Image (cartoon, rainbow, N blue to C red; front, side, top):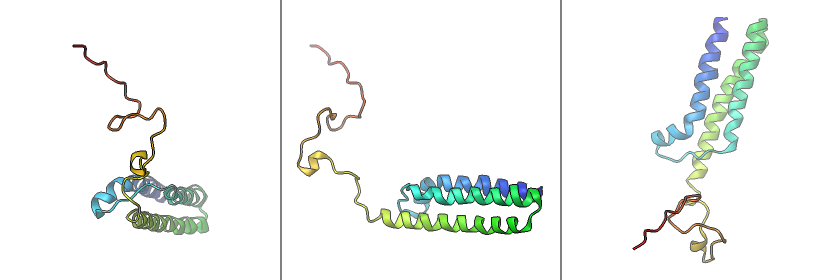
Length: 131
């Protein structure tokens, strides 16, 4: 039960929190952007599946191969996360800053209903003061 508790807390909780907050913490540390990409869910899913294999199959039923495979897949999940983060960060530097170009910068007119530049979408206009 000690092994199951230890791995559930340190891999299940701590590593999940590292995976979840990496897009916020790593850019501050490495001084490069780390945009979120859907592929970052793959290592998290692999981590949880390998923990289920290790804890609920291996430790709970005392099956040695499940503990071994679960441990190996835990390592693979962490390495895959590092690879995905490096790839995401490396490809982010090649993207143009600013995202999607606006209609004004592309020479076109904005679509009907587009708020004026400098206003927030969905903002309620304030009543104009009368003189």
